[in-house]
Image (cartoon, rainbow, N blue to C red):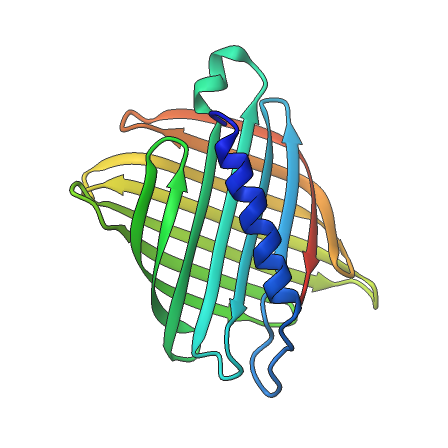
Length: 225
């Protein structure tokens, strides 16, 4: 991460988002709400912290609030230029159940601040979570981005489940040049609102692309469900 300002922005956003969301009652008779997801993972290359918030702003689920925050730190000095911070936030209008369009903004430590136009799909259930959004960065040389989160849990007993997750992001400049991608695999155990296990991270940078990867451990918490 470059500088201290992104950390301050993240902590401020995190505090006010959680304060607002905690006060909201869950709608009745609607699909389950995705919980606020917070994860810390560490391997032999880097440490990673990330959070995902997807919450309705009204009882009919017409408007959703979305935020993803991502911060990583490489251990070796030669990889420090790849340290990254990302905060992406938008508000979406759902014209049918789980499908909507939104407006928001992104802060990235590599590219700065940009306004975004977003299309989203969200489907949540007791044992699964599917999230997909496609983003256009509204700037002179537009960037295009696709994000996917696929999550499934296999019930073992009343308290324990097998936890599996695939999360991926790809960003292109003008749909021609690769800019940034990552893929994350998580396999572990779920105990009530906590998950832990083994994670694999694969990162690609620049049009070449330059590839990096690691295997490590992760711990997650799901709150404000």
